[in-house]
Image (cartoon, rainbow, N blue to C red; front, side, top):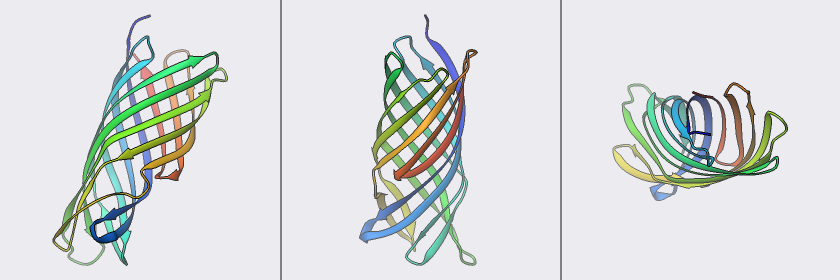
Length: 199
């Protein structure tokens, strides 16, 4: 068995609360798409790099609303899977950065930058394979700063929750195509749908 390259694509939406300097809190929602390439080793260790686009979103807090414009995101990740019979456990670690703009929903408002970093996101998924379908439970923890500007004042913030709890399911075909649905219901809320093809 040799190492295999794979390519993938995905789309997702996330929702959380950011806390900035001075106790300012804003609810954030974003939609993004990604394309990725990776390498899977026979030891079930895999590495992946992804580039994507933030399509749109919103920030709301303190009685004010902001539209999130288009931007970009970059992610690098590594994962390792252990299998015992039909059961599996996967550990993962990733780092990412995104850059977009926000514009307050008032006339003649100017756009300002919004930059976010996930300096360390670690996760565990545990599940069982039923033929080609594998449901799983997930837990992730993360941390990193968010840089923004309000009324000409630079602000630094972070996510209020720093965790995700949820579940998902993956389905694989004999010819190397896999589909993944991932939903986090507690902490940072997120839902994503991804496809990958082994080359």
